[in-house]
Image (cartoon, rainbow, N blue to C red):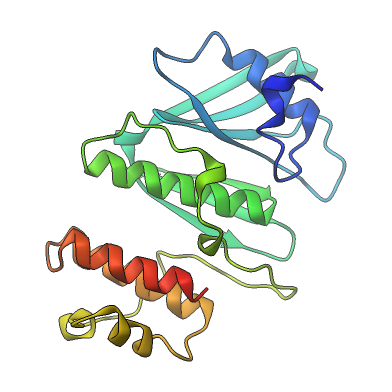
Length: 225
């Protein structure tokens, strides 16, 4: 197996699809652009040429094989065009969706759950860095904390983070220390913890809490997942 594709096979991506995509992308990457993660469709029926999504430190690239694999159709969106990213988990794989600032929604289905979760994490990190003025930094997927990966469940679950955010008032996040934060999370399941983390992010974006407070809340919540 070629060394340059091994790092993209951590979640059982199709090696042939990864090799074909990376070969085609060699001439398309911009200066200082690096591939961070590649996810590959895995449909229930045998698919010789699955679609792929490539996340780089500069953009999202959708790769669709054409003409029996002899050519590849690429659609890309830079991170400053992306408004948000979402994951919906089904019994057979997941749907990864991202929205653009022009109100487009792009979805790829039948993505293995762990790959969809890794994509979601990578996308959120890139969008956060863009907001903080450091969008060109790279994020190695192996550096993502294990606590950020939701435990696999056997039954169907839906994790659309845009839809499960409950209403939260400001006093809910006005804790004086991490001990009180931890106490407030006792008994919450993973979906509720994710919803709470999203609430804190919204409060940070609206200037209602400081970055340091958000980081403390995030660290505590991830430690309980």
